[in-house]
Image 1 (tube, one colour):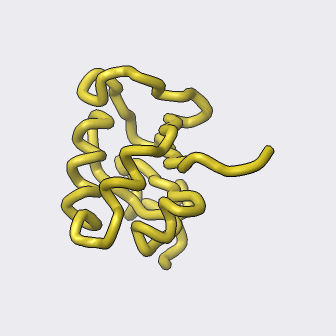
Image 2: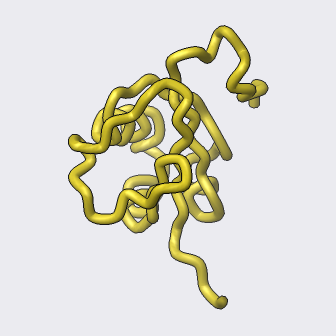
Amino acid sequence: MADLSPLDPLNVGTITVHYWAAARAAAGVSAERVDAQTLAGLLDEIHRRHGDRDRFDDVIAMCSILVGETPVGAREPAGVALKPGDTIEFLPPFAGG
């Protein structure tokens, strides 16, 4: 995968998405860049990119989502504004502790 450095001028204005554990396996990538202004827009775009992969939508639906270090929780995705340079983390449930 290409370098995801936030200082890369080709990546200005985009959101960095990180997939962890089962989400990474479902997406087939560990990270990618997405242009989106809301979490709903980002979810639509990653579905467009990976929705045909086995279990992608099911795994993403189970994930906790962080915008930066802030959990999204049960907030409506259309109401979660994103800004250029944000990092989104998709964290599936983990066993153990």
